[in-house]
Length: 145
Image (cartoon, rainbow, N blue to C red):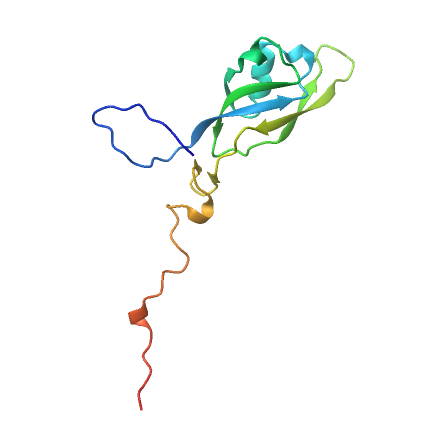
């Protein structure tokens, strides 16, 4: 994972912890009625906070999928699909569910313990090891005869 920071004279080079990052996702099976800014934003919000749409998505020149940049939170699960209810509270006819498929351009490492990106729980710097490393000098000595 590479995260860029804007340089300034007092910049301290350190490995920061990030609980939110931006990723590009592809959303499949979007109903035609939702191919507008409000509809795509509504659908993308089921994955995270929508930030930008790809130019071909905005112009509707490719409608086989929508490509959207979304801010995801490390404390939330990454969804691979979700159901979109297509109905109207004012319409007496029952609505239907459409399964929206989500494909991530890249899935970051997520630590479920400290809720940050960049590592998994097995390498979490905030966790103490269950068994401290053994000290060679503290081992019991054998009696010599």
